[in-house]
Length: 240
Image (cartoon, rainbow, N blue to C red):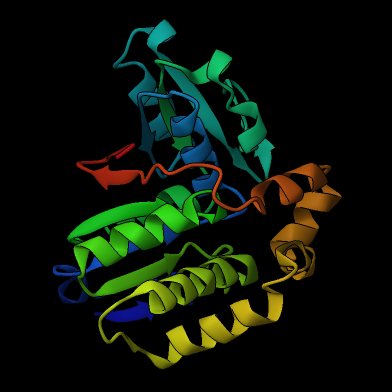
């Protein structure tokens, strides 16, 4: 197995994805929301790029069967049911419902890597389960942090580094790391005992605190809350 991590969220070359497993990471907060919602009983999540697309997609389903969730500038979108805090996605709100979600970074990332062999959503919430699934599949892996509006994201790289660390320590076969993967693993080692510190240092973490979402940082730093491994296939994310 070779592990690579794309630290800048530009579209990978399609030929690099066709036989690779891809793990999309947006710790603050899109993939954390998706994993949390599915663990609370949501049926599926449809990630879309734009607000307009979300409203149009919602018209396809009975209104009581679907919820709109997401953010722009970290705030809930006008006319949406939910924002982008995982704490909002409780069973009483999302169980047996479809979710249509659009965010600044995370939802777009899934479509950038849509030609991957298998595509999963990862965060600290399911990091152990993601590592186990990658080892079971035993295929080359690309970790794809969604970044911060096209820029490097510290918290996503640390999460990717933790995934690399778990796989390399649990794997029974030789695992090859690219320079980027080595760097992410070293970065995780720096914050291993205090993940929240990375959130507080990151640009996006500071922005969330400024906008009143400081509680989300501590919430999203929780490790192994669930064993689900959401998979993106045919435009939809479902729990596996």
